[in-house]
Image: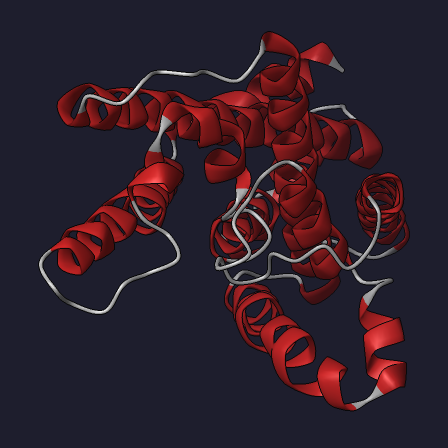
Length: 274
């Protein structure tokens, strides 16, 4: 088991696409969480229309919400792509036979992939917190604002919640890759769900139809957005909104993570890998 874990982790580390995804996640997070609110605040001070997200939203006190606010949608999409690549490339390169003939069972190899994805998603979340902390500290220092950092418990809670959301989307990508035995189609369908269908349900259908509003409260995206909102993520961020309580949101997101992980293992064990 440990050999499979280290092997799968080595694959992720040596794959340039994963580092590229990490870089995109950092750039997107800093742009939408810090740079755009700062630009809006600057425009408002010079007479341009104001914005409900300004300088105050970029200060250290909002580190937790700012760091996990993108995970329900656009950063979640990056986690999904990482999950698809971790599993789907084995089909594209026809390397499943090579891996499985070395001795480990399918579930052992699959468990190693989940372990590697857990490390990768935690790395993304920690990097988001670290870059956010540095950026907010620079902003506060340059603007002469106080550095009121969240408490240690709040930071741990935020990191844990962010990791849970990120790992759920990565597991979703992995199960799509196993179900469709590839990379392109799982990425395409996964991104359509994350970036289009979820937003249409949240912003268009749910306000018009009661049954859609009820349905979305059981879906992973709405619960991930509610969990992030409960920890201070801005409601102006796509996918963020307190639709359900924090306990339900946590349990539902964790439940989807378990379902995705178990379903992926079951499909891999029952079906031909070719």
